[in-house]
Image 1 (cartoon, rainbow, N blue to C red):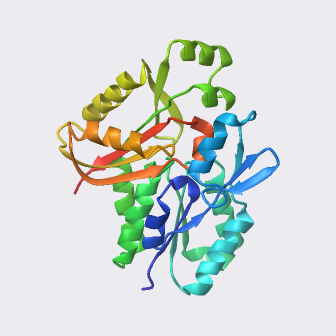
Image 2 (image 1 turned 90 degrees about the horizontal axis):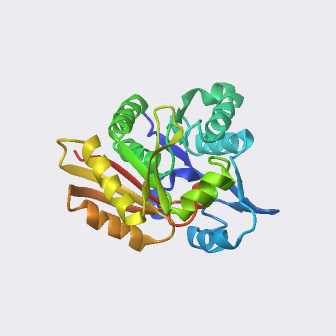
Length: 287
């Protein structure tokens, strides 16, 4: 059997070196600052994005790759690796049309697309990026697509995640909360802790006053979520502020034994919806 090829989109926030090492095909979404278009993580780095975002008078907009773009990616893979199955993992359909775009591309390929499986991750950022990496690891071991999907689903079920948003500004600009709530929350130094539900939709878990208390509360929530588990793998997504990620890992190490540790940027497309100072933490039990 030919080796399974793994595809994802740029919102998986997989560190570029890791994606390259595992041979993961990453299809970029597009970020727009007014009339300027940038391919996520290619034409604009996270560092450039988070430096520019606070100075922008307008909230940047984003768009998913078109079905034709995905079709071309799939066709290119099939030409390079004839007969190889493709597993294509994407940001939650509850947050973006990316999954539907990839699904339509598969149907456009007709018989050529029979070996393509498009997966709705029901998550975002490295909350599904780590699943993509595991899929690529298993593909390198020549596991079947069915075995890979089963293992990835098991990981998805065991994974826990929380986002700490430093400012309410971008949630308000994106229409997720009202302006009055954003102003009041800012005055009260409210730091929302967010997560993603079973339907792949972002929701507010708690609102905590002060960042230090919010970080402590996130750790309490993780301890409650995985009672009886001591060893965990952890990934921390930051907004081009690796020191904040390292600080959280240090705090977390006082409560769990950390096996695999990944620090990654929350990329420009995801970052446009949450803003600077966001901390996204994903944990799953270590083997």
